[in-house]
Amino acid sequence: MPHNHHDGHCSHESNDNDHDHDHGTSDLGPNDNLFPHIDRANVVALNATREGSVVVKPWNQRNNEEAFLESDADDQLIIRIPLTGSVRLRSLLLKTGPGDQTPTKVALFSNQPSMDFNDVSDKASVQEFDIPQDRNIVEYAVKTAKFNNVSSLTLFFPASQGADTTRIYYVGLLGHWTERKSDPVITVYETQANLADHERIQGTDGNFSTTPS
Image 1 (tube, rainbow, N blue to C red):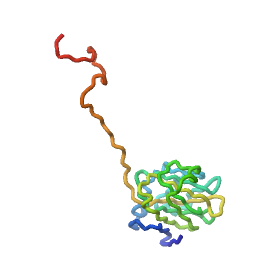
Image 2: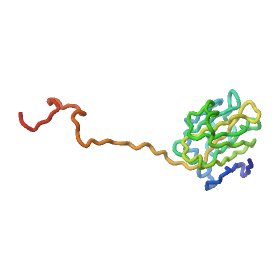
Image 3: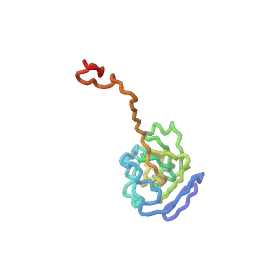
Image 4: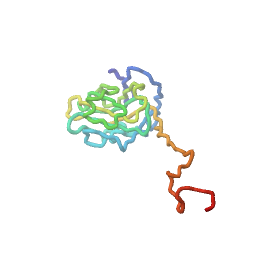
């Protein structure tokens, strides 16, 4: 898959260019950087030597190679990324490697917050990308129509490119975030009081009368 380098950053185009976006950046990254909307405390990495949140970094730390995630028992790795709202995903950003520790590819699954290695063989990914050996951050533009209402994103790295382990330095997401709507509170009002549903008033037998005794 062809990709172009620009300013230490290269991009892979999705087959359907169905998105319009602003490439403007600041100290916080691209205007649609989703870092503030990732629930970092609950990012989970499976078969990893460290917590998954170590690779979900602020934009100004994206090239820091001191903190990284490495697979443990073999070269497979799963990262589960919960979001704090509903997301229309535009791109995945990855910094991987070095060399043979680069994953062969990444498979993306949306809204599968508890996916593990037993699930990946049974469920079809929404989209997959081949990963080049590249020490720059690579942008993978997703098919946005297939990632239109994402509350969690799971990344599956099935193998390295020859090493015993796989290494990830940075994971970033770009897209549009909206606050998740909570379920409405439904209140039921009684049209007529039913004495059988209420506590009896002391000194009565549950029947009221206006006639003096």
